[in-house]
Image (cartoon, rainbow, N blue to C red; front, side):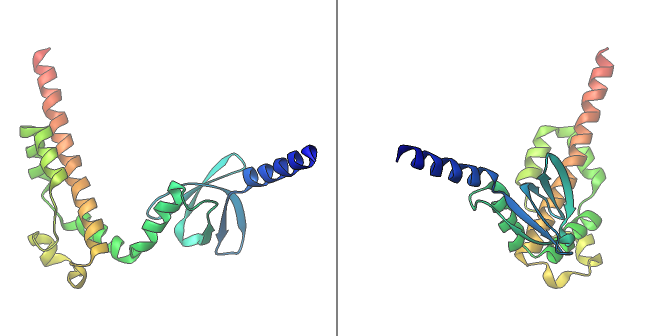
Length: 178
């Protein structure tokens, strides 16, 4: 009896340990492995010891082994936002938001304090004159998916410029001190 229970336990454990995420492509090919990371436009998938970067347009479905896995939670978050609206938000923020030279100067003059201010700011497409005038997406300015992606991209662009400004200041101080 003890050997039978041990054998059943061993079989169940081996089945559980070999189970994984199942990825189905649009051409109906399926792969079993592990979803490592889900990005905006691609999925990083590990199968057979190799890592693959698969564009989300080529993915038909993903079946996750566990609903508590971080990659599954990321997948649910990605589905909740409309990718087209998110793309429009990223694009508008990248093309029209902010004045890069102003954020460079803020980073140069105030360094980390400017970056903290930018990190807590909530950029809006309606408050930016260029975005409001030039964007063709005025009808979705108040959509939550659009705003989330717009704010994320606008903040990252501004933080990069301020970081470069601060870096230049540090470089000048180091050169002047040498």
